[in-house]
Length: 264
Image (tube, rainbow, N blue to C red; front, side, top):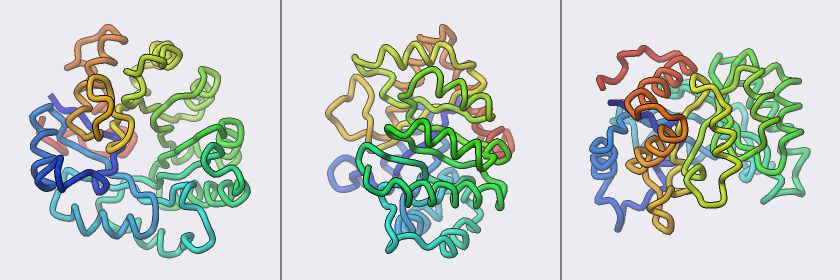
């Protein structure tokens, strides 16, 4: 069985007290069948540190972008970002998007930068990884106006309403579910999950954030993806091995990866 953590921040994990080192973290994940990882960058400097940390790990792939919470005139270098995306392990653009919850005063700059990420994704023919917080209408409008259907992508850590999910599916986007699905107050997300076709679903930890039950209160890590997958398989009423096969194939299809990339 092979599970793919489609969104994690591996460089932000605690390698001082929780994990001995990167290999220790990966060993814990492997024991739970998580064998492929998409490590997400959120700034220019973050892109560089990820390359340095994980260049020897062939099963850790990258997505490079500038998070909306890192959106200011001093951190935006689109020329350098494009150059960084030329690394052969970069398979996506992002994390990009809009966040009006934490950063409501820079909406126009966020929207401009979001559009630039989509344009770059189309230029280099790679999907875009989207973050959205209290910005649904602007997020959908920009995706449509920028013809994001031509590059496709993911709305990660989904926690929006069914109408947004339908619009994302209509433009060919995948929807990724995180540990939020296990939270006590997330019944509305569980209802949405049941609606989403399984061939449009991905799973993620968003490590070190959004730790699933029963590990709430602890730092999240890729090994906990198994708990998320098990929970979703119960909601979808399918075997976890089947969920693993489908979501892994979804990942391979979206990112144009050979099906034998990792021997499960």
